[in-house]
Structure formats: C-alpha cells, structure tokens
Length: 181
Image (cartoon, rainbow, N blue to C red; front, side, top):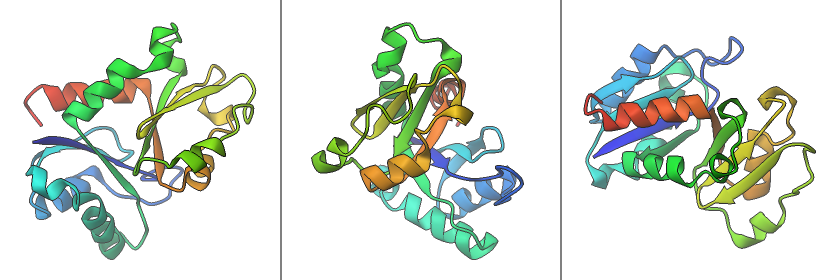
C-alpha cells in the first residue's frame, strides 16, 4: 500500500536539518519501498505493508531522534486518505484561492471536548474547519499572519498537527497516485 509521511519542523529556519536522502534511507531501513521525497521540508511517499503502517510514525520519529538528536513528529496518511482530503476541502467548494488554502494533518482524531475548546474567532479574517483528522484552513493573508498555528491545534486538540499548503498537498497526492512512489 502507498503512504505519505508528513514530518513537522524539518529544515525550517536552519533548524533540524535532515537531508531528504537521509529521510529516504531511514524509511527504507524501516522496510519501506519505492521511497520518494518532495521538497526539503519532510514529505515522503512510499510503499509499505498495511500491517506496518500504524507503527511507522513512531519508528521513524525514534530513528530521527537517535540519528539526528531532535524530535520530529511524523503524521502518516494512506494515498486513499490523501485523495479524500483533496475531495473534501470545504474551502475549495467555497472558491477560496489555492494560495489561501492549507491543511493541518492531525496525528489522531480529536475528541469532542477538545473540538469544543477551539475558538472560531482566534484569528479574525482566517477560517478553519476540522473534519476527521484534518484541519482545513483558509488564510487569505497567509500562514505567517495567522494565530491558527500548529502549536495552537496541538495544545487545543491534544494531538500533533503539521500543516501543508494546498500546492504541496496536490503534489503529494500526484506522487502517491502516479505509480512511481
């Protein structure tokens, strides 16, 4: 089965350097095949047995900590799940510009109590919708100006969130579907 690994905080602002060749080698060392990476911020598409998928995020995170000495949370989606993300973005249906669309991928499904703690007015002019393990965002003034951050969603939803812009989500989906992963 084909999967997409989304690592948080890799090669951002000169911190937590992890060359994509090393990421690919780590995934291969964990039994993944046909590994390809996308841009330098910790995205990989690969094949792995479905029975191993549940353990891969923790194993990869531990391998990076051991080899590089820093913690890099890992969120995993199957290629089918990623395709579903593309089809279910509510801001796409509302006509939001591609450059204003982002997706926060959550490691776990947030509980109902945590969802109630989210503040719809936290970042005026910006909007979000939580659907399953995704947070769809509409950020017309950009990600740098929003208060809807990974940290906010981590703390409020009690899970790990890693965000990607819409172009990256589209590119990862194409890689996962093209048979070359």
